[in-house]
Amino acid sequence: MKLINGKEISKKTKDAIKAEIEEIRKTGKRVPKLAVILVGDNPASQVYVRNKEKACTYVGMESLRINKDATLSEEELLKLIDELNHDDGVDGILVQLPLPKTIDEEKVLKAIAPEKDVDGFHPANIAKLFLNEEGFIPCTPYGMMVMLEEIGYDLDGKEVVVVGRSNIVGKPVALLALHHNATVTIAHSHTKNLQEVTSRADVLIAAIGKAKFFTADYVKEGAVVLDVGMNRDENGKLCGDVDFDDVKEKVSAITPVPGGVGPMTIAMLMKNTLLSYKRRVQ
Image 1 (tube, rainbow, N blue to C red):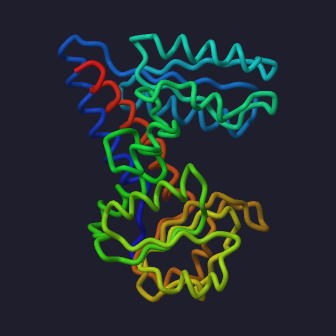
Image 2: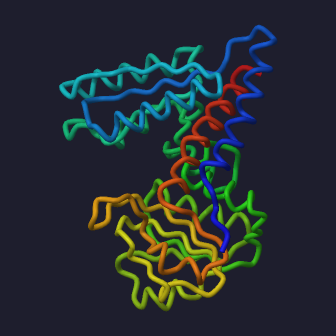
């Protein structure tokens, strides 16, 4: 069993970005800049934003953090996004979710200029992903493709089962696998005989948010397992959607939780921001 180490792969990705930004700095040009808007005081959101700021510092990228009270109106937030859309010194705009219930998240995500939508959530970028055109790929699915590439796994002709159909992970990763010539099944809470479906997967992507749901019975012998889940077990310990200890002897490769897919998401955010900079400046 090979452990797919997200920390190591993300560091390798960030080191390559760091080297590229250092070369940009040497030319005297401005470096890429990511603007992050945080509305309210959600503790988990604050941790995510801090991790993004740390990654920016590590790669040598500028970061602009804009903190707003939960009382911020939707109109004020849209006005702020519009200002950042028109700021030539900002390459990526990210609004940390979730937002207060008084704000329409969909409207906010659509307000970000597609060319600065480094999260890859804007309908224009989703359409480009669907058409296999150049846009911004959502960071978590993008990270999973990089992980498979890093271990030398070719999806061509393989059977991929994605359990989860969110717009952020499930659907985009299914499209990416399809673009790599895989045969893709998207399963979900209404799928009949789920165990039978997942048991034929050469690659199982687990993204349902249920702690240790997938045991060895759900996994094909020699499969590659990518676990997107981030849950707490009965002891309060972080765990994925896959019962790691139960499946590890049966699979050929698997991502751990924590330290698997998670670190890749932020590395891909850095990569998308650099890509935005290059498209806009160079």
